[in-house]
Image (cartoon, rainbow, N blue to C red; front, side):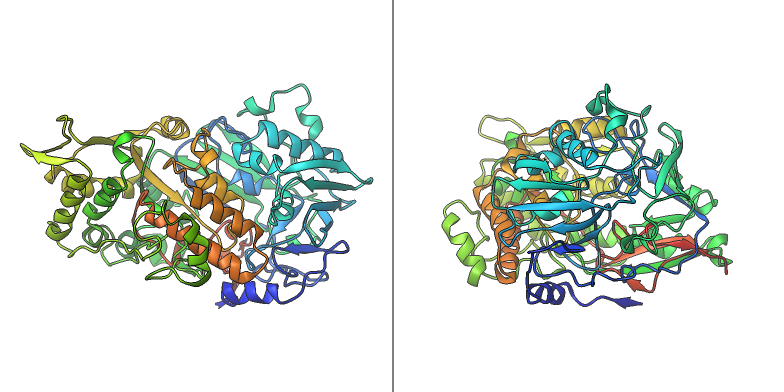
Length: 600
């Protein structure tokens, strides 16, 4: 299989290719020009000659009670946001920071990026055959920015003026400097205005299927059990270059299960035609069943070059017991990574060293230097130990007792005012150190990790209660930040931008439903996000992200586990994917987007 050049090389190439935004273009990049010319046939990781037909049946753990992925209320199959809706521009997962025209025929941006103007394709249609109009676009942006999910609100606040400038064109003028905004505005889902007249958009649920222009339409639903998407044979955009080689399967079915064990058994029985495996041990030992042995199912390895993101146990600093960084460092130190990794995976998997590790954007070992240090120095008196001078996660001895790290953890807790008394860790008032770990039912791997971790904590006098709840209660509690510690996973891209504010921003810490589960409020984080959004050079952008990575990691908010530089997919042998892979690998936009079905 071929992989694209490394992401840093691509970023540099885009930066050095020049930036002329004086006229309408077929695409837009954060730096320079898009890699593909205006007359490109298809994205390099799509097969424009792929046959149409077949189906894919995917499994998910949990349930759902809504089909509107653009509001805060309800639980929605996460794929609907991407498969059942379209935006003005489409993202290329073969290039960081690059969009190509989808509903929009062209995009125009001035050199100072103070506004962006899109011109719609005249042939763009909703699934009911009605045209996509600039009125639909304007309504979608205004509604999402005010009544939609909080992820849409931040960018809408940066719009000074939105105006229809022609029969098929619309312009957004910004009130603040944010070089990513022209790209962000190209990625909002476009909904049909007439569908929602007289209806409460923010309260819609299972009874209202949003009408969109996407290649797939929702054709069958059993609430909480399954959703079926069917390819629209009259899809308007089949000849748009961005869409060639995509939406090849006639049907996408999403089945929902109470837990991972039931889902895996459904895959073995043939109810599901694909399964994404995250357990190395399970991949190595439990995929020897008849369908694999006789070739009906095959195992595929998909490499990638994206950042690790963060995955592990997050501490909610809205809770008083987690507000002292020494307590958080102690709990990270007491986490016996080496032993847990080996026990659960059977073979050691690489550790997540920082939020952007495994990429050119990750912080480097040792003290901060160069532009990274320059960016962080003004916040020196606010930064936690290690941000400037270097930080690495504590290393255990690999044994179950983990004595050295346990001693270090107890010393840190003592510094923070907690000491052992009669076998319990207590403060000066005699209050015990106790907390709850919230998990969703059926989350097998997190449960295994927590079981081993809890045993270690109890040996040093920490009382841990593990609570498993169904997906509905879990979503409600995490939306309200009603937890002490819970399982946390955030994927990060090679093109970090405005979404970082939703992940780590101070306002997000106080906004229900945001992704800032740790409750982080940090001036250095805010400043680094602003810098990466306004960087005019590749050097400054990379330095800003590396600096952000240092502040996040040394904030000690998450007890990180492991990552995999590959994805493990088992699937029906008739399901195929292109030889050329996107740099993001098995990510949004890959399965089922560019897959097809073809019998041997």
